[in-house]
Image (cartoon, rainbow, N blue to C red; front, side, top):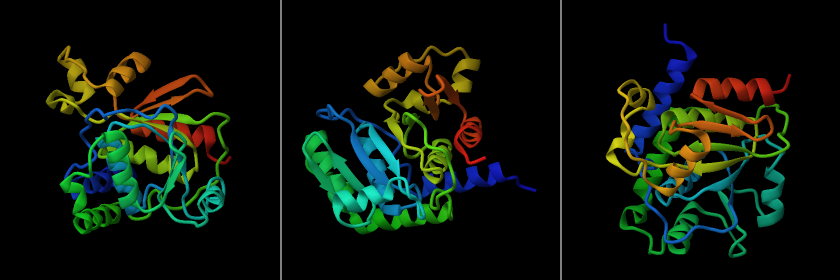
Length: 255
């Protein structure tokens, strides 16, 4: 009989294939924001997924303020700042811009930080939207509804890329617990990045690391393992999605 972990990974892997791996590869942006972007979203939202995919592709970090259904921690901020309760909602303090609508946000990110017009693949809006809805179906209600939690004094940090099935499980739980976190996007930049960390270690492969975000991750955490959670409140650095989810539940889940 399949256990919950296996079912979760199967559904998460299905979501990755449904999007044909989009949100896996990163290319350096023309420029990076000096102040972190802020994204109000929830993991199960198909429109929010498109924005997260664009963040990975552009190698951009963002402060995530999870807004699952029934959540009270950040949803009121969206209505106050933007005038309506709709997701995704992006706030860019560098340009004083606030945007709803995934297509507008993605175009803005490419034009402002990618230094180029929206690529043709992103202009196929009906196809992208359909694929994102199919991916959402693979995860059912995960990352959709708020669960009781204790707010951290400081936001957490998560090294992730959108297409990672393992990182998705962590993002879903962070969303459900309404835990704010700095999303450190570390999309793949070279073909050798597809080799799992345990295989690299077992074979003692000293492979080059490229890309600003991946280099920063290795310097910060000592390696490249997706996902990796950094909790500045406890000085903890945790790898492996199952261990991270367990840590989140024990540390911030309601007793």
